[in-house]
Length: 140
Figure: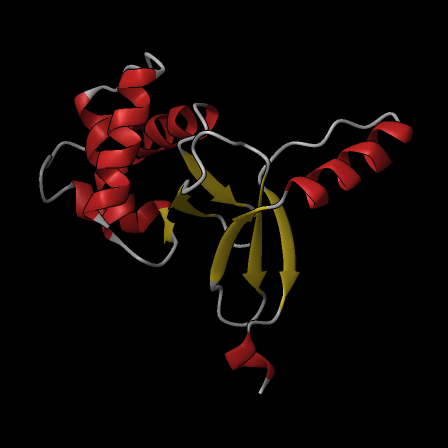
């Protein structure tokens, strides 16, 4: 997961996205974990490096990182994951309802079809688009 962290840091440098030390630590924690993390799990990890860290520290950092589109909040279960499609923010997340597994992919065809349909309804979609279902393991 170190490669994802470094790729995001490079992206931040390229696009002049400033990161505080706390934001960088939160980002690193998220990138080090394969599974999506809840805010309280991130806080537990952050306290290992900063005993003064609290819920507000985490929530401000998560809000900023999400707004900068370098992490995603999975609304279904209020967890956070690193973005793996930094240059193209037309991504979709497949989220398993049973186990919470997530798969991020980016399909221009899916995005454009949803964008056109939503615009016809006077609606603006925001990415990532969460698609709920069951992973292969949970379908068995």
